[in-house]
Image 1: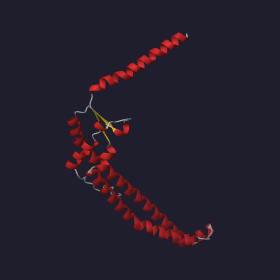
Image 2: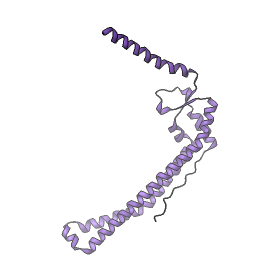
Image 3: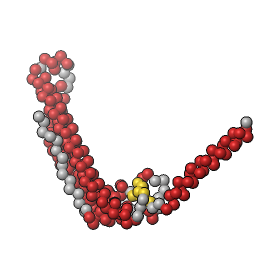
Image 4: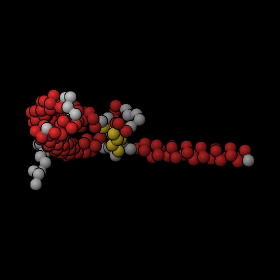
Length: 194
């Protein structure tokens, strides 16, 4: 019984070795290219331009929200002073104070809805910008793939090890900088409420 287990183990090891060696032998003639997507976006003129424009839109959105946010904070503090020390019954008995609380709650809800809408607009703007960036990147990457005669393109983040010789990131960034130094970034707007 022990000899059988030993033989079975040896057979499994030899089969595993063949499965590991066979693909590497078949891939010896394959040209592999590695790219670092983060570096392409972060170091290219188009990527930097896109991020600058997105940051400007984010700043613009925050500036739009600031006056309402500040007014609500001021109103909240004023209400807190009026509510300080009052019991629930005393608050309910003061119709003017109840109306102020209701008005404040409605303004807060409206602000939260506006903030959500603007957040969705920003996300749509960011998504469209990355689609446009990738549209500009694709022909450049295919050109580099053709130049290097690569049959396989791997993401550097997914590889365990890559030699600098197979990293085509710098070539892609250089070509992208020549062909597309900027990306048009247009703020996307949510449809008007019906």
